[in-house]
Image 1 (cartoon, one colour):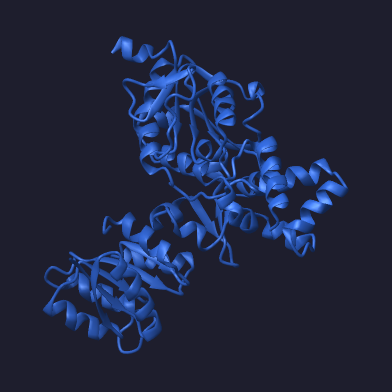
Image 2 (spheres, rainbow over the protein chains, first blue to last red):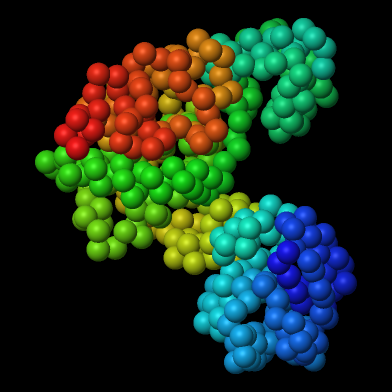
Length: 121
Length: 279
């Protein structure tokens, strides 16, 4: 079973996204900010990461840049999932190494579609 | 909904679009007519049908019939078929074209995403012969509202996230400040939309190299299926390809078309398939 790490400071978003992604046959782990996520990745690099942008301690963009410098840090498919929905933020995320981008609010069909775009389902 | 209301609406759908409603699908009528019902302040569909009968209004009847059709679509809904068209059918047709023109008809295009998806995929063929072909993509639908939406090419937050990768979204659409996304001008040069009832002849549309008709046939009554297939078949240029939705059963409905021997998923006019003969 593939492993997806959900990184979001909202417990509600982690729970909702977690249920959707479990239904796509992933095991799910959670982190509330980028620094916590980086620790998890160093111990057990996930196959996919659903990543919020604005979070305390370490935001999503800084996490992504740090992740891509880690050993095997280029392996996970990273899907941003954020309220930052303008073209500038999207371009910046792609330049930093994001593979896909979900604009909040989202539903199960969007998550499945985006995961399909990057070959996760 | 009263049984008589269901029967009236089912008859109206059959007459206008050939659509078949089984009695178990009355909930679809409720869902699809809720917007019109609300707008016209009908408390129930029974009231709507009473009004249709008491004050016949062909325009309103047409609007109700259009609303009863399925609008379900999304970008790249028929992804494999689009790949087949772009990778094989169009290049094959281009080889046979003396003018370098290629015409594609997306029949029953609903709100236009399928036609735009084809245009996007073709535009990605940089460096291939398709890039220099003169392309014309016609999207048609029974519903005036759908065609207006398709022409506007403005789609909501949820629509653009289903079927479109972020790269395709950024390449082909511009974001408005209100969060909606609009098809870029570069795609609009080749894509046109118009209203067309597939039960009626479409000879004024001219001939096509490729026709894609997905998510239409399966919802129709059998005589209407045959009628629509005739309409489509008559607009196929010699050796043109006709594609349907991936889960739609067509075999046995028309003697005018047959599965292509060289193009997976495609149909050709019966008595042709010269591409195969030449191969």
